[in-house]
Length: 200
Image (cartoon, rainbow, N blue to C red; front, side, top):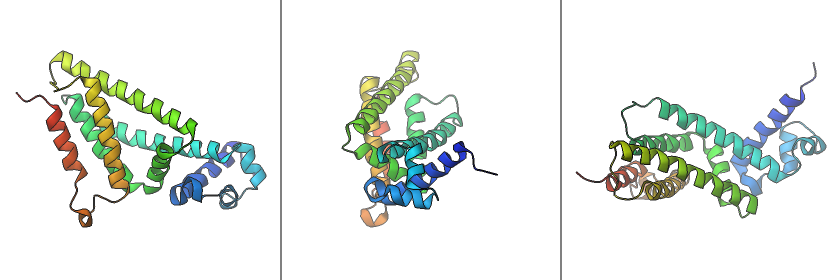
């Protein structure tokens, strides 16, 4: 039985995710991806017009996996937690995801670090969308009286996501290992949350 177009496309993408995760955008070659996926270069380009298009598809796979993991952790938390605590716990699960999925993490990190204007634009849009969503969640808790912050919720969201990016790179680069001076991303996150909460 012949392989369906959908299955062939999925096999190519799975291979690309693996190779981009191991070698990075600049290290992985389209010819290598085609060979590993057991398709001709012509077939590869039929499904993905360029290396950039294939990398963006690989990034989307990594984001989907990450979001599924983080959302499942958020949904599993007690309903009485405030949004700042929920976001802190989500970031901890994000760090765990990075440790357990280095290849996907590399794809995500490279998509942020790319010089390409389209990558920059989509990453900037994603950041702003996340800032807005987190800011609105925190504002709702502030309005209900279940959370008091030392700054505007949107500013806290910007700082939170900036810290999150730094902590993720720390984990990705193994800078959180004991040999690197005992830096503990979880402690840094706990400290940030404590500083952002208005003390009673």
